[in-house]
Image 1 (cartoon, rainbow, N blue to C red):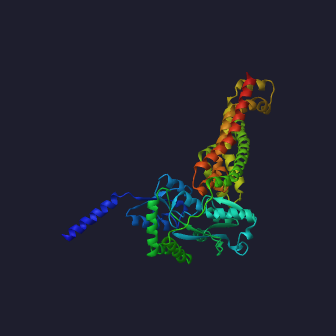
Image 2: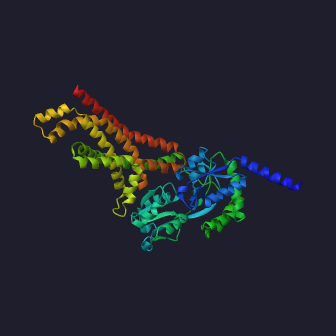
Length: 488
């Protein structure tokens, strides 16, 4: 009888567990180990120390963990809109984040460290040694803020990345002189990329936390209790040792965290008002707008020049020339511009190391040249053949026909599509952030991440894009009206 009751209890327990809502937590598997990564033996599941910490929280809540993939920079916004209950993927404890969300107690202490080439270990020991040199990091992090301070104090050139892999390969290849990131990331990168050295002296100290929606304080308090319990019973230490991230700093950090919790919790860190933070970022947005418009204008000029040459070659060239140019157009239009940017900047690095801005300019210009060439080719072929034959009868050379008859009419036909393409290129310039170029959209993303809100940064970004694109549209419209009136 007792055995039957026991089995019945087990069945009921598992039935309730199956019916209970899963504990949905968000993270970015692109960040890789030891945080969150796809299991090499079974890519459909994830592993990492954050995965195991989330599993312990779910266990303490009596629920089953469910991982939700989200881009790292979107974790704060996604948790507020309810995509998952908690964000955990190396999320840093910052005053802005605590002001905008329900943040858990810290569960791991990390240190910002400088990584340099092994041969430069005695040359670049501190920010003072890196005066005037390039230092890379992830955007929207404590390390990024530290580098902005160093930029003002020491004249360091800050280079922002969207991932934590390319900064270290760029150091090895000579594009950067150092990287400032978490000691966990630095240790992992030293194993992946040979010839690197991490300076032992920390530049700054930070902590990882979980973030929940600001209104979800009840669940946050329950998670805090679970994290404290796992600190006391050694579970977190076991997880950290398993992933080789336990160090001499953690015992002191655990003791301080538990002591702070027992004495009433952490005192709130003062944070600047929203308006002060917004005004602080406006100069950066304006500077990024200049980068966007200069990059777009020069890229469009290259696209127009190259597009005219390609279109002319396809209309007037021989069989081989037309075949080669057609192949170029089809390949460029048939592959993503993002892939082309990566090939130019990273794929050709062993042959030629293009500066980031130049690679971005060439990538956008040569990509849009393929589209522009189709516009110009169609416009050239739209000019009535009767006019061309009449010009030949009058003794005009083909060059004169092109410059005096066919070209001007084709340009008038192509003006409206050209304007549309320029506006499209202006927006596509946001893709060049993958090459460390900080343009308007990238700076907006950094702004939004640091204040924990996309509404105001997004509105400012949209307004600036309108300011940049509307004058060109107005100018093109006036030219069309002028030419239409002249032809009537």
